[in-house]
Amino acid sequence: MRASFAIPAIAVLAIGGLALSSPASAAPAAPKVSNCGELSVKPTGLVLSCADANTALETLKWTSWGSSKARATGIFSENDCSPTCVAGMFHRYKAVVTLSAPKTVKGTKVFTKARVVFPGITDQSNRTFTIE
Image 1 (cartoon, one colour):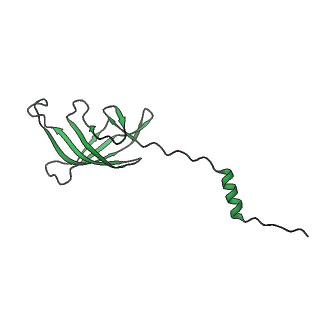
Image 2: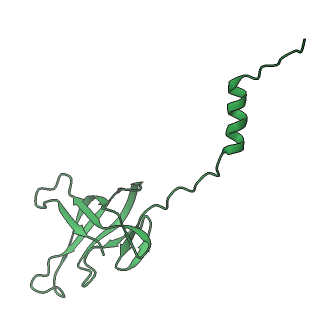
């Protein structure tokens, strides 16, 4: 009579899993943001009106940067252009910024929307900007 040896199924699965495992895939690159054409991740400043630079975000501190949204606190700065943009005054407000709507542009994933919220400020309404 022959002795028979049973190999536990878990051992077979473990060995098979090692033999069939595929190399780990790299995590997708985090989206970038365009700062008037210059792409970056977690910039400290972001111009929202590239034509004249009269609207911008300053001193940004990023609290999150994910694949679908990024969030920061900082200062929203805007020229009142009164009486003209050259003679106008810049007004600054504390702001919370959320970048969203990532799209692939020329092979790079970039955020395309910036939502600016002004916590505790009653003379400003929340605003959304298209980032290019």
